[in-house]
Image (cartoon, rainbow, N blue to C red; front, side, top):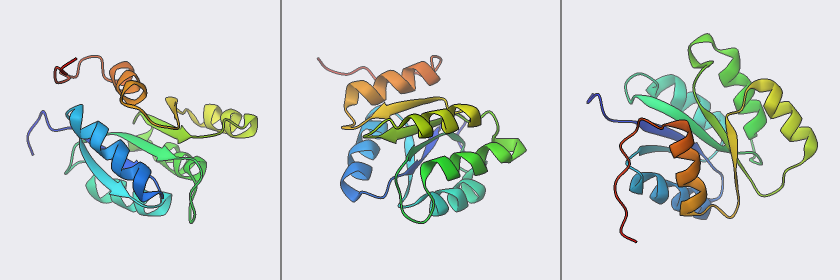
Length: 137
């Protein structure tokens, strides 16, 4: 594993949204482990965490099988992932979900529709030391 490789676990049930977010993360210099549900993402995190140098999780809130809040709770319950940055992607900010996520230690939100500016700003906030590729204006 190369030291500068940084992977992000992406949990998003919409193939379109998953493709868009993956494309934006790749442009920012991260590799992406794509997962269709929180359950699959949880399994991927456990299997790939050290091998793939996983540095963050980006998860949709509303997913079948296991939603983003439940996934966040499982991540925070595991000692070795306690400080792993976890960002929720959402179209609607329901107060109940925001309160639950905050209690569980979410690192932020990206509102849908996901844009390059939104994802870039969040990743730069989480990883100020990361060398982001220069983008043509």
